[in-house]
Length: 162
Image 1 (cartoon, rainbow, N blue to C red):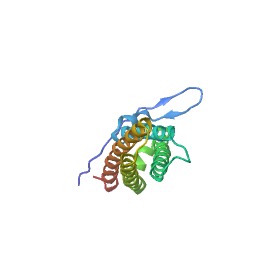
Image 2 (image 1 turned 90 degrees about the vertical axis):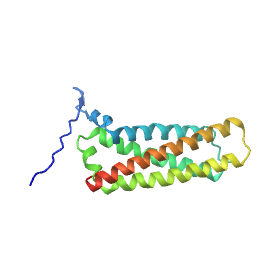
Image 3 (image 1 turned 45 degrees about the vertical axis):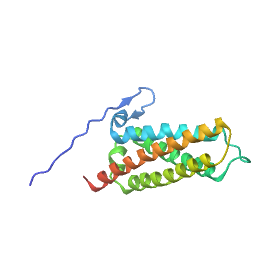
């Protein structure tokens, strides 16, 4: 009975003074690039919505979108940081159900928040800077939700061993 063996080469960077090992090779993989893109776009979304955020002026769609953007920004940062700091985390965490559930929930909630924000902003009259930044955030939210969907598909394949 024959078995297929996959060997993955990982590039690490060490510093002589602190003995910190960074798994920089993880950023060259598809899941690593997706997490990095989700992190960058999520930070842009938080910046766009929070720039014009005033508690007395904010409507529920802005609050919900900002809540989802911040929550998944923190979660994605923790996932990416753990995969970069540990040599074995990137290969192990992708085989667990956690990453599948996380990316699926992130896809659904980010998509819902983006659609609600987009509908709300286009229905009401706001100033042009306020409206343009929120429309950009909603569109980027749809883009990042598509990235989370792609990550969920990859996580499902990895979880099932495909």
